[in-house]
Image (cartoon, rainbow, N blue to C red; front, side, top):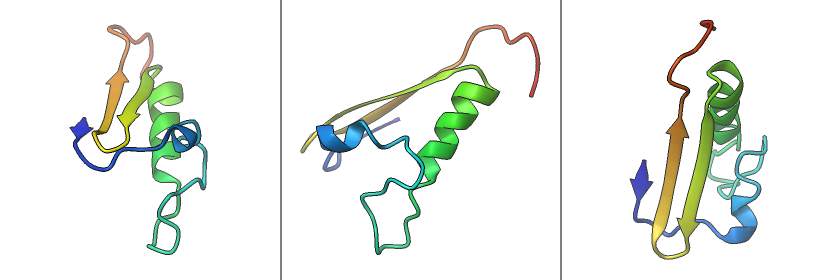
Length: 73
């Protein structure tokens, strides 16, 4: 998924998958969404979640899943 918004700073990129990290404090944002998604993708579905972002140019999240899963969760 890609957007063409404000982007995410390099300092924040390294933290966005940490629980309770948020850039939207005071706006009703908990900082749990990306941590939960990252956990679901990587642990439950054995996939990977990556992010690329450039300030002023937007952000791109890429999710990859293995072709064959040996078990369902």
